[in-house]
Length: 307
Image (cartoon, rainbow, N blue to C red):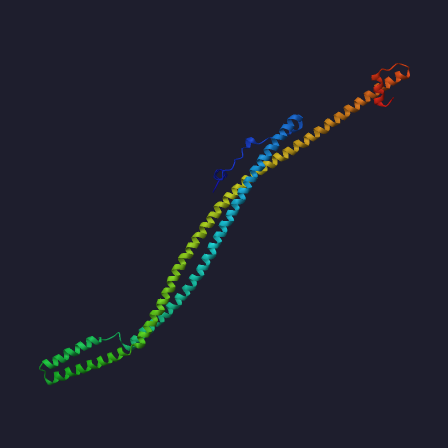
């Protein structure tokens, strides 16, 4: 099983160092000065952008790996379909081979039955009978025999001549047998051809099966890498989201501080206007009492609208 560190090394991606992350405590947020918060916001923004870039690169590599996984699965499926197609052909040739072998066996059985009917496989051969007849005739011609022995010898010669004639007649009538043997051998030969196709196609089907298994194995390996890359993406994205959330919190706090400062400035301006009004009223009272006013006093009266 591939590990995250192996994926980082294999695909040459930047590892996320948590030491580079920017922390934001509630105390920092509530009690930090405006200058400190502005600095922290910049740090959070920069780290967020770095993490978003890191997450984007990891997501891209994850998507590439998922695409390669799909390619391998498609490749495996192609081998599966080719294997199944070849296996169908194997079965067709097997069925035809078995059918032809059965037909050939029936023909060879007929051959054996015909041989038995013709008794070609039993008794002595033509050559043996001819040789025995020659020996008996030679004996008849060269030996002096009494009448009884002569008669027995002649009977033996006649018997063997009858067997020879019968054997020759059966041999002359073997055309049907020869045709049957030839047909049986042709059917057997055709069955052998189908058997050869079974062997060839089965070997090819096995090759595609092995390639299918290998493609599925590679797909599983790449999918594991894609899953680890996704975990790395999630890790970077979650860290980026946290930095963005903290950045938004700091920005909100800065706006609150700006509003507080604005309220303070408004209060100061109102207080100043009230003081100026009181001072102007005192000056105006002096003016009514006949005191001489200088230019600065007159400007104060004009500013407050009392003159």
